[in-house]
Image 1: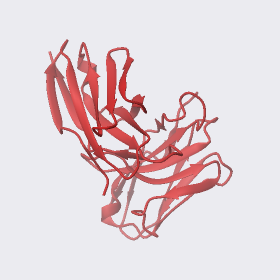
Image 2 (image 1 turned 135 degrees about the horizontal axis):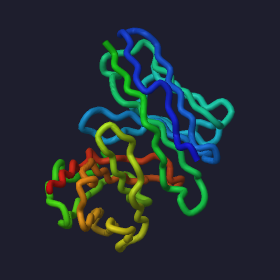
Image 3 (image 1 turned 30 degrees about the horizontal axis):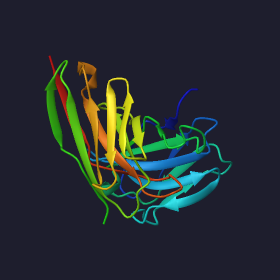
Image 4 (image 1 turned 30 degrees about the vertical axis):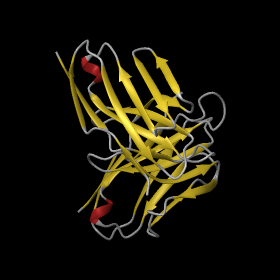
Length: 116
Length: 111
């Protein structure tokens, strides 16, 4: 069990550029989540996948954000035309979905995005 | 709206006991979780309560009262390594999917 991994760990971009982040969940976990966290705040839910299906998306997520999980394994989160307000830590989490620990989410180390 | 309220900061000394309270107001409720996050680190799961009562896991215990929309995390025999942010989070749907997090409580443990 290598845990949830995210790439890159840090990203600095200029306003208006597109960025893409990758998340590799724990291999046997069929649920995958994306969150965003700003300084002094708790993680804010963005979207959720069960296998390859995107089943839930926050109303706070603008059209500039899109996420995929094409084969039910890794996931990508793309932000188009980045804005300074997008600067945050983007966290990915996974959970088994079944079994005694189905409600426990395992978080990755996050990707810190800075938009200049 | 949906909100979770918890104190912003708590301080204590090594060996002490602290209680971090959380009150919630959400559109649905299926359980209350607690996560720990060290500076620069990822949130890690501590506990989960779906039913009223106390759940104990080592030095940490968590309590839930659904009728009061209230829970707490109890940390005993505090150690310096317990200095971190603690978040309560509500699972608000039956699928047990998205977590709604509070703003977090920063715990500082001194010697």
